[in-house]
Length: 389
Image 1 (cartoon, helix red, strand yellow):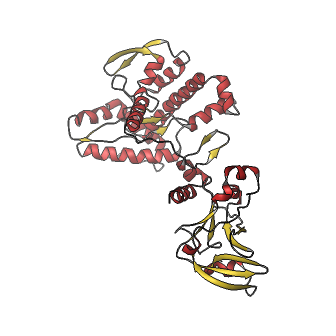
Image 2 (cartoon, rainbow, N blue to C red):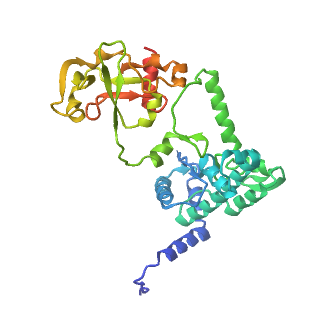
């Protein structure tokens, strides 16, 4: 009455059998037809970068997307079913540079920017084809491009101005190869949307133009990590996802001699980034924290009272006075590199002031923090606010 069930489950074979069944019965097309005209549920695919074969983490995310779409489809909604490919950014450029054996951006200029851009587009198309095949094997239901069509376009891009005719969902489309690639994802071509498309790029420029016309775009200053290899800034996303590591660095405590005050008085300043001291502009104190004036040897130092046990040897200092951080605002001091030609030329010496910052902590350091607006996001924001007071 019943067929024997094998005690050994061959999952890859089961996957192939299900995919074959879907293909032969046109299951996806029937699902789309059943929900045609029903209430729409908008799903806009966050594009995967078409730069390498998919990893397990990509498959995980795509499985979640497929799950939501199937659920909404079974609930009687019409879906978009359009996949997306991210085709821009350093990821693709760097891989193409590796392929061509380039060592610097100067190599791109010598090679020719137009030729380099063409290579980037070809790479995006070829890996989009691979990712389509992987996604289909994953069981992800989408209105997929024909992988061979994407590979065909990648090859044809060697002569981007050649006029070709391709079959779209509404009939034949004739254009240059470059033009066809620029129209990928459009209603007349169909398939996945590509961020290298003309529509996407023109829309970005149109939005920027509107922002400019409304006066929303301005020229300002920001602080961003710089990649010497890529000759470009790194985004916060890149730093957060790949740049942070748990490391232990030795902290540095140094004196900033005070100006306009009697005796040999100095601020005791703490930093974990001594390489930024060349860019020091200010020293920050918390307005409501209690600071002490202490005599240590032949010198007088200022630091947060709560940090004393961690900074100076017990029994070797004398507390001369106590004051709140806000009482120190505006004090002038000598910076660590004020005698060098460039700081003198820039007038940095006159800029050194004690400023107030509520994020200064007594938990570590001396309670006085060195501020370098050219070296950190928070420092820049603090410096900008202070400059306009």
